[in-house]
Image (cartoon, rainbow, N blue to C red; front, side, top):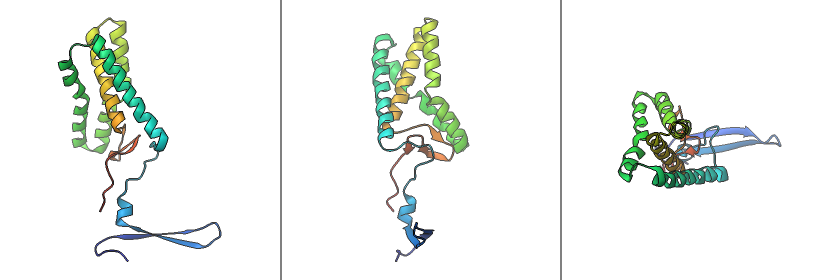
Length: 163
Protein backbone atom coordinates (compact mmCIF):
# COMPACT_ATOMS: atom_id res chain seq x y z
CA UNK A 1 0.00 0.00 0.00
CA UNK A 2 2.59 2.59 1.06
CA UNK A 3 6.32 2.60 0.43
CA UNK A 4 8.58 1.39 3.21
CA UNK A 5 9.14 4.11 5.79
CA UNK A 6 6.27 6.30 4.57
CA UNK A 7 3.68 7.19 7.13
CA UNK A 8 0.03 6.59 6.35
CA UNK A 9 -2.88 8.17 8.17
CA UNK A 10 -6.56 7.26 7.93
CA UNK A 11 -9.38 9.70 8.37
CA UNK A 12 -12.76 8.13 9.05
CA UNK A 13 -15.91 10.16 8.58
CA UNK A 14 -19.55 9.53 7.91
CA UNK A 15 -21.14 10.89 4.77
CA UNK A 16 -24.57 12.49 4.48
CA UNK A 17 -26.15 9.09 3.86
CA UNK A 18 -24.56 7.69 7.02
CA UNK A 19 -22.11 5.57 5.04
CA UNK A 20 -18.63 5.21 6.47
CA UNK A 21 -15.97 6.95 4.38
CA UNK A 22 -12.27 6.16 4.78
CA UNK A 23 -9.61 8.40 3.30
CA UNK A 24 -6.00 7.29 3.30
CA UNK A 25 -3.47 10.12 3.35
CA UNK A 26 0.17 9.47 2.51
CA UNK A 27 3.15 11.40 3.82
CA UNK A 28 3.14 13.34 0.56
CA UNK A 29 -0.40 14.60 1.26
CA UNK A 30 0.59 15.64 4.75
CA UNK A 31 3.66 17.57 3.53
CA UNK A 32 1.61 19.95 1.37
CA UNK A 33 1.31 23.32 3.10
CA UNK A 34 -2.21 24.02 4.26
CA UNK A 35 -3.71 27.46 4.38
CA UNK A 36 -3.68 29.01 7.81
CA UNK A 37 -6.93 30.40 9.13
CA UNK A 38 -7.13 33.92 7.80
CA UNK A 39 -4.86 33.29 4.81
CA UNK A 40 -5.86 34.57 1.41
CA UNK A 41 -6.02 32.29 -1.61
CA UNK A 42 -7.21 32.31 -5.20
CA UNK A 43 -8.25 35.62 -6.69
CA UNK A 44 -7.94 37.47 -3.37
CA UNK A 45 -4.30 36.42 -3.05
CA UNK A 46 -3.64 37.52 -6.64
CA UNK A 47 -5.31 40.88 -6.01
CA UNK A 48 -3.23 41.47 -2.86
CA UNK A 49 -0.04 40.61 -4.76
CA UNK A 50 -0.97 43.00 -7.58
CA UNK A 51 -1.69 45.65 -4.95
CA UNK A 52 1.85 45.13 -3.62
CA UNK A 53 3.23 45.53 -7.15
CA UNK A 54 1.31 48.81 -7.51
CA UNK A 55 2.69 50.10 -4.19
CA UNK A 56 6.22 49.16 -5.30
CA UNK A 57 5.80 51.01 -8.62
CA UNK A 58 4.20 54.12 -7.11
CA UNK A 59 6.63 54.39 -4.20
CA UNK A 60 9.60 53.98 -6.56
CA UNK A 61 8.18 56.60 -8.95
CA UNK A 62 7.60 59.02 -6.06
CA UNK A 63 11.13 58.38 -4.76
CA UNK A 64 12.54 59.25 -8.19
CA UNK A 65 10.93 62.68 -7.79
CA UNK A 66 11.66 63.31 -4.09
CA UNK A 67 14.41 60.85 -3.20
CA UNK A 68 17.98 61.13 -2.11
CA UNK A 69 19.69 59.10 -4.85
CA UNK A 70 19.58 55.49 -5.97
CA UNK A 71 22.50 54.40 -3.83
CA UNK A 72 20.50 55.29 -0.72
CA UNK A 73 17.45 53.57 -2.21
CA UNK A 74 19.38 50.31 -2.65
CA UNK A 75 20.83 50.50 0.85
CA UNK A 76 17.54 51.36 2.57
CA UNK A 77 15.55 48.85 0.52
CA UNK A 78 17.07 45.89 2.39
CA UNK A 79 16.86 47.44 5.86
CA UNK A 80 13.43 46.00 6.86
CA UNK A 81 14.73 42.47 6.30
CA UNK A 82 17.08 42.84 9.27
CA UNK A 83 13.96 42.02 11.29
CA UNK A 84 14.47 38.40 10.19
CA UNK A 85 17.21 38.09 12.80
CA UNK A 86 14.47 38.14 15.46
CA UNK A 87 13.60 34.59 14.36
CA UNK A 88 16.75 33.54 16.23
CA UNK A 89 14.75 34.22 19.40
CA UNK A 90 11.90 31.99 18.21
CA UNK A 91 8.97 32.09 15.81
CA UNK A 92 6.78 34.33 17.97
CA UNK A 93 9.46 37.01 18.44
CA UNK A 94 10.38 36.70 14.78
CA UNK A 95 6.80 37.19 13.63
CA UNK A 96 6.34 40.25 15.85
CA UNK A 97 9.54 41.91 14.60
CA UNK A 98 8.93 40.95 10.97
CA UNK A 99 5.35 42.23 11.05
CA UNK A 100 6.42 45.51 12.69
CA UNK A 101 8.92 46.07 9.88
CA UNK A 102 6.58 44.87 7.11
CA UNK A 103 3.31 46.58 8.00
CA UNK A 104 2.35 49.76 6.18
CA UNK A 105 1.60 51.51 9.51
CA UNK A 106 5.23 52.52 10.17
CA UNK A 107 6.10 53.94 6.76
CA UNK A 108 2.76 55.75 6.45
CA UNK A 109 3.29 57.50 9.80
CA UNK A 110 6.83 58.39 8.69
CA UNK A 111 5.47 59.60 5.35
CA UNK A 112 2.93 61.84 7.08
CA UNK A 113 5.60 63.25 9.40
CA UNK A 114 7.91 63.88 6.45
CA UNK A 115 5.21 65.77 4.58
CA UNK A 116 3.82 67.72 7.56
CA UNK A 117 7.22 68.67 8.97
CA UNK A 118 8.73 69.30 5.51
CA UNK A 119 11.51 66.77 6.10
CA UNK A 120 12.50 65.29 2.74
CA UNK A 121 14.85 62.75 4.34
CA UNK A 122 11.96 61.13 6.24
CA UNK A 123 9.86 61.22 3.10
CA UNK A 124 12.58 59.36 1.16
CA UNK A 125 12.97 56.71 3.89
CA UNK A 126 9.19 56.18 4.04
CA UNK A 127 8.95 55.77 0.25
CA UNK A 128 11.73 53.18 0.18
CA UNK A 129 10.11 51.35 3.11
CA UNK A 130 6.77 51.29 1.24
CA UNK A 131 8.54 50.06 -1.89
CA UNK A 132 10.15 47.22 0.08
CA UNK A 133 6.83 46.11 1.57
CA UNK A 134 5.18 46.28 -1.86
CA UNK A 135 7.99 44.18 -3.34
CA UNK A 136 7.60 41.53 -0.64
CA UNK A 137 3.81 41.44 -1.09
CA UNK A 138 4.18 41.13 -4.89
CA UNK A 139 6.42 38.09 -4.32
CA UNK A 140 3.87 36.57 -1.94
CA UNK A 141 5.63 37.30 1.35
CA UNK A 142 2.89 38.44 3.68
CA UNK A 143 2.68 39.23 7.36
CA UNK A 144 3.76 36.25 9.44
CA UNK A 145 1.87 34.08 11.91
CA UNK A 146 3.60 33.01 15.13
CA UNK A 147 3.39 29.33 14.13
CA UNK A 148 6.34 29.72 11.75
CA UNK A 149 7.97 31.77 9.02
CA UNK A 150 6.25 29.98 6.13
CA UNK A 151 2.69 30.82 7.29
CA UNK A 152 1.58 34.28 6.11
CA UNK A 153 -1.62 36.21 5.58
CA UNK A 154 -1.09 35.64 1.84
CA UNK A 155 -0.93 31.88 2.37
CA UNK A 156 2.05 29.57 2.86
CA UNK A 157 5.29 30.53 1.14
CA UNK A 158 7.63 28.13 -0.56
CA UNK A 159 6.91 24.94 -2.38
CA UNK A 160 5.43 21.83 -0.86
CA UNK A 161 7.95 19.13 -0.11
CA UNK A 162 7.68 16.70 -3.07
CA UNK A 163 8.74 13.75 -0.93
